[in-house]
Length: 280
Image (cartoon, rainbow, N blue to C red; front, side):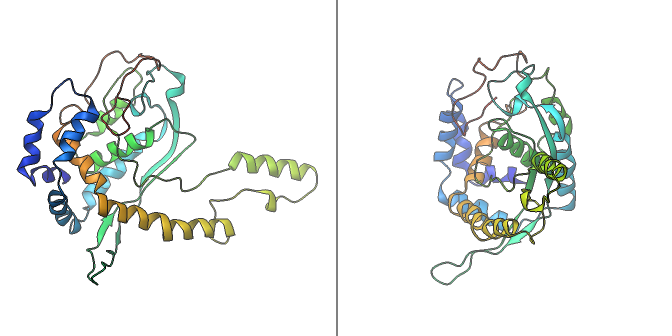
């Protein structure tokens, strides 16, 4: 469990006492993060390197992610949108945790090798997304995997009559993997068929097998550039570790708590303007 990392360094725990209730989420979060030294991060990493997700944890995660699939009001997964706002409705085709992968550690300049680390790729397919929606869904997914939020709480967060605080995960690791043009392709096929022409060369198919040149180039760039960058950035900066520290120490008891009027309009400020603070 990541939760045990909050006790790696006692000085971090003491910062909770200095947080004032009237501070903004960003100000309070900065107090915690200033105390997360490189030594604390290294201790947390040391515990993480040998950690491997259990079948039970992976099953909890996968079952929990299914709750997001379908059409729901995602007003709790963005900001300044009320539960009755039509724009809150979004359609998630799939939200899946793929098989865990163990990525080899990077070679250091002195010839030593960093330890291998396990990662769980998460794939979301949807028609469109709201501001911070994916990052808040990932925050909930992390908590589902470590069993600090229940399926019932997630179900509650997807009800238009409920307002609930949901944290926002770091943007690191989030990237657009593929765009789908199914409707465009269908219209092209229909139009070209009616005119008696072919259509294969007119379709935009970026989701097929690697026999398509575009798909092959996308996969090569993703595997050679994007994923190594994500891994090395986390190793160097520890953004997710800092986020989990702040969440467990600072925001414990606040996240997934019920708020007031669910009909608050998008013109009312229901969260912090800071990008990586706790938002409602």
